[in-house]
Image 1 (tube, each protein chain N blue to C red):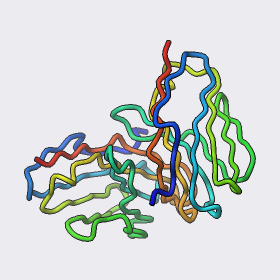
Image 2: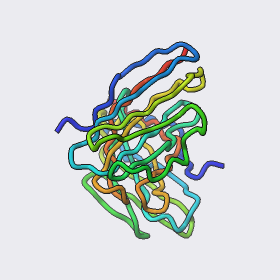
Image 3: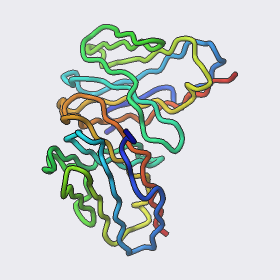
Image 4: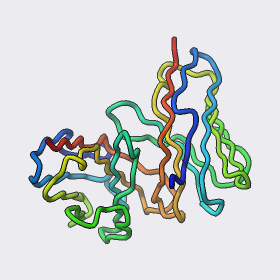
Length: 114
Length: 111
């Protein structure tokens, strides 16, 4: 089992461009989480899917950020009109059913907005 | 307002020493408290969790939870250089797997 796979590992965009980040959860896991990590804010929850349905997006910035899970094998996080303050490591995690259980994190995508 | 606070921010100890990390959380009704370990360039990895007041031991790790004082601690026995990492404490918000993380403690074990 390769674990949670995130692509790309690094992405550099210019201010105002769009960025799409990909996540492949562990096979058989029904819950997928997205987090953002910065030095200043630490690890922040963004959004969460269970069985492909959005459950909680309370951490998502209301504008420019969107997440989807079109099938059980991948989820995407899209940031429109990227801004320098969006620079961070975006981490995806999956778990069996989304309750109080171990989250398995990918290695993250480092997004740099110039 | 930060819900989960960790101390110290960083810690350097010699190999073989006992390590103690502290964490305070904000909601006594929270279901589980988790500790994760994160090495540079990697995602966090779950180490141990605790639900009930008291302690729980797994290998070289022991965690103590006191809900009345909203405090949890992680102790690492016989520390190894490979234990050098950032340790993250997390509160499981409403027991749905949505973790609220502290800022972390950077641990360095000197050979």
